[in-house]
Image (cartoon, rainbow, N blue to C red):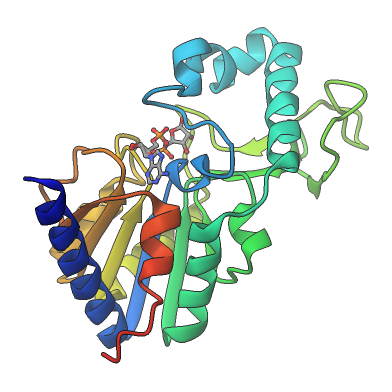
Length: 253
Ligand code: APR
């Protein structure tokens, strides 16, 4: 395909997805680290992905935390400082605008960075938790902690026990009520977007298949091919910060 053909194909994709969006009564979206890449937050996999440099088993499992909680906390503290410096990008902002325009809208995110909140999205289901929340390892008490750097690591709960990051690690279950709501929203959607995720981590990635099986039109937005690219109705090879705002352009549809 030459450049002209590629541009035409992209324009057709854009118009088709924009039409589907205009007609949709209920939209569900699954996002992953790719949507925050253009805000300067490294993804987990792919070129520059953090799991190329760091070991997930050491830093993002209950076993790793039991072995060296200070190391795990230092890593999360570093990530908090990177995220605190970042701003929501045009992709996050476009999703917040889509939410304002569509009657039923649910944003399911695997991201823990809070950039969707800062962009103005409201109906957010954080299936992998929230890096700005800490939870007691004994009494389960949760609290918000918005400090980009926590001076003394690890932090402790008022009950005296150690706290942990309020995120979901490998080998842990997802928060049940949040996950149930994600499943309900996916089943109800007539249009489902899967954006900036490698779609290899389950159960989140399973929502794509559930959406398809429930009759939704499914659109993937990703700079690369993923395991779900062949399953979806349209796999749009584009950056989230470019593709999503393009859907909001008035085409007189
Ligand atoms: N626009 C769209 N997609 C992008 C962009 C971009 N600008 N940049 C990168 N991507 C895509 C990559 O091609 C890749 O498919 O984003 C995806 C990022 O994949 P991962 O790094 O695997 O992130 P994610 O899918 O969110 O990971 C799932 O794994 O490590 C755990 O708990 C962590 O929630 C995370 C989960």
